[in-house]
Length: 83
Image 1 (cartoon, rainbow, N blue to C red):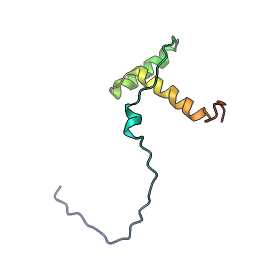
Image 2: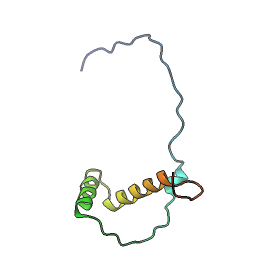
Image 3: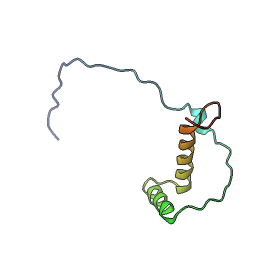
């Protein structure tokens, strides 16, 4: 790794992107949970358990996040529930 870095004098274009990170108070906020009983296929549960193991998290948390993302994507602010 003793190669020298060659720098060029080419013009660079910078582009401002909108801030997409939530503020800290949203990260600390925990939504109210409702316990439900839900029967899932063994294949689905095995998939989430394997993925959760790879990412060092809980499979239930991944399923909750998936359902929450679905709700966010398909909910309108007026509560009509369709896109």
